[in-house]
Image (cartoon, rainbow, N blue to C red):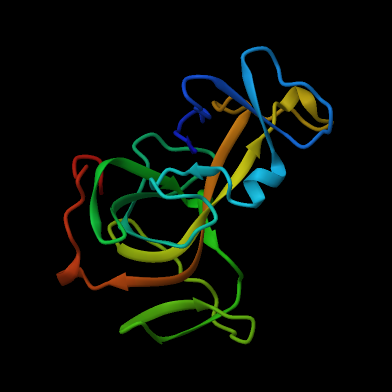
Length: 196
């Protein structure tokens, strides 16, 4: 069974029905919803498919180009347009905001792995900070998507934060390897009209 996540608002789709994820014993699902226990998610009996088209919490390799947003955002300075997933060109646009794509840790090293030289590799024993990104740069990352809950600002004690996202779920890409491609090796993006 697979669930599909999409942006700007994220929907969970299960055979055309709304889905409620619950771990409260005995709590009935909302009318028209299918209940899935958190234990089923943790045991991989149910897979949630992220923006990359791959299951969340499973390693995946993505490649793409950084750009500035067409409309400036208060929280995001850069967008990462994914051009390839697992070496295959993407058929539809996939974009992560800079705060949606971040390192597994703030410490790392650089070096060779799997026949490639990586600018940054997550390591508890390294002292190399994660790389800084700039518009027009092509990067490749190995990491995984992580499911996050988007809270309704009215449901928690705190300042009301303006957001264009409805409460639900979203994904973040957590990378543990990153490498930059030299300008000569940079590939054109499928959505090159928006890439800068």
